[in-house]
Amino acid sequence: MTGDFNLFDRSGFGGDPDPNPSRELVRIIIFGSKDAIRATIHDLHLKNFR
Image (tube, rainbow, N blue to C red; front, side):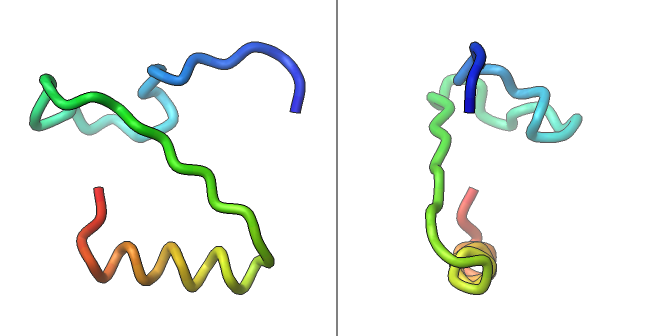
């Protein structure tokens, strides 16, 4: 990946405003196979990870 990116740009997160604007934005990157990534995302979703 090349180029500049803004870690605090929320445009990629949809149009919903942050319900708690005092919270610090953190991005998590998952590396692995397609199946492992999908399973991890599903597991985090079931745990209401936000």
